[in-house]
Length: 154
Image (cartoon, rainbow, N blue to C red; front, side):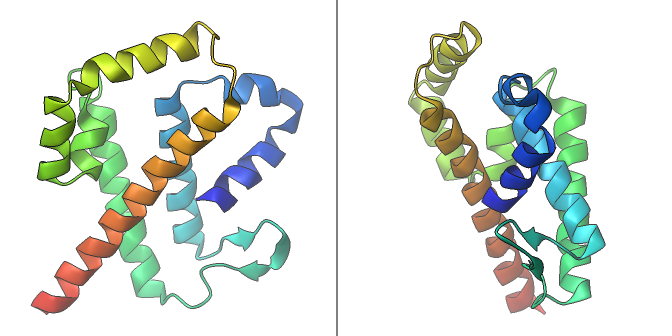
């Protein structure tokens, strides 16, 4: 996921300030869409060495399976996000993790974080980058767990 964002930062270097100031939700969904596109094309060039395809060891069937799953996730999030502000957490986290966030008053924490971001009081860009990376790591773990569940039942 880091590679996708490196490519996107490079692609948006002329409007980088505007690009990185978009909402975290928009950036996350943009990253998911770019991941889906890369899986559909069966190619994700390593940022530091563009001739290296990070997907080269994955089978076409696996890449298409992941692309389809991500498409379904994107469609569901797009359809429900206006009415369910926690749809991202519901789609990515386990039920236990999602319940923990709700018990921990996640809405207040998230709202405070968003307020700091939108009011541009945020001084540490690493906090933002780390949040994006955490979401993508959770997504990858979720996808891998889904694969393990699929492979054990077949």
